[in-house]
Amino acid sequence: PGPFLSVRDLSVEFSTEDGVVHAVDGLSFDLEKGTTLGIVGESGSGKSVTNLAILGLHNPAYTRIGGEIWLEDRELISADRATMEKLRGDRVAMIFQDPLTALSPFHTIGRQIGEVYRKHRGASKKEARDRAVEMLRRVGIPQPEVRVDHYPHEFSGGMRQRAMIAMALVCDPDLLIADEPTTALDVTVQAQILDLLKDLQQQFGTSIILITHDLGVVANTADNVLVMYAGRAAERGTVREVLREPRHPYTWGLLSSMPRLNSSVDVPLKPVRGTPPSLLNPPSGCPFHPRCDYPRLAGPELCFGQRPDISPETGHGDACYLTLAQKSELRTAQTEQT
Ligand code: SF4
Ligand code: MG
Image (cartoon, rainbow, N blue to C red; front, side, top):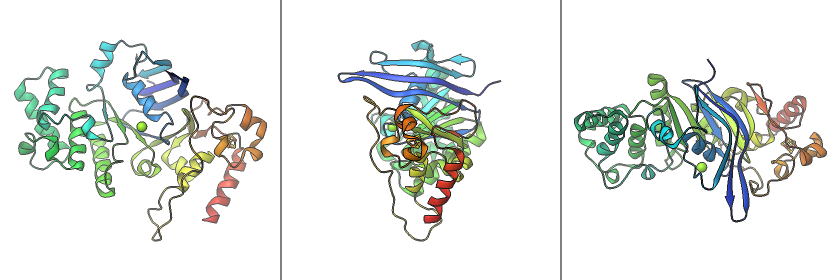
């Protein structure tokens, strides 16, 4: 059998008043069953858009989608609305940065979790309530029999996040898409939520796509990483490969802006210089070239003239014209400096 989720040559274009925005451009990746793929990039890199396409949540009036998205033996881009609606919440679920986008303030937590279960599983009210209590217990909410009747505003931020996870997982989905699930939380709660996701994955075998701008989040949570830039794959590999032997200059930038967890001195955060490109008029050649220090080394006619592609094979790969020898030499020089 192939991978659990397979995205092939995905493109997503929006029509706007100013022209066509190429939000995702020729993206391919695989997700193996029961593993976590971290998708990392700045805002506007296409990571959220990619996942909305997987969920079928884009607005078809403004969006053109190309390529293929295979969930086991089912292709999702060609699936009709009813199929996608059935899939969402049941086999595929999502959690967001802000639980209040998923939770209504007007209904109790238990009712909202139960509703999803009733809709997809045809459960009775009593069954749905029992299931809600069980789910709240699973995600580590104390006194779930009492908490089930509370409203979202009676929960702390971290508990709301847990409640949203409970709601997402109520039908035991095979795939969970988590879009910046911990960005709004303080560091301690953030670590707790990521641990929770890992525990649940170990217990229930859920496959997870974790979208984040923070390589640090990925370091402790994901098995594989996809670094996205300007709607394209910049680098891909196991967490170990990408963190230990990063190959793409953009990944180097992301790594140097990561706080050192083991360091006692406060290393100031150094963001990647420059800003993400406009996807209305993307730069020619390598989309990263306006922010890159190495076009001269790699070959200006290539960097400015021709889009670099990531190798189609699986395994560690990146989309940059520098040779592997140049990359490792540059990387060694950088790490010696710090
Ligand atoms: Fe920099 Fe050229 Fe590599 Fe792009 S292809 S990241 S511009 S060296
Ligand atoms: Mg986003």
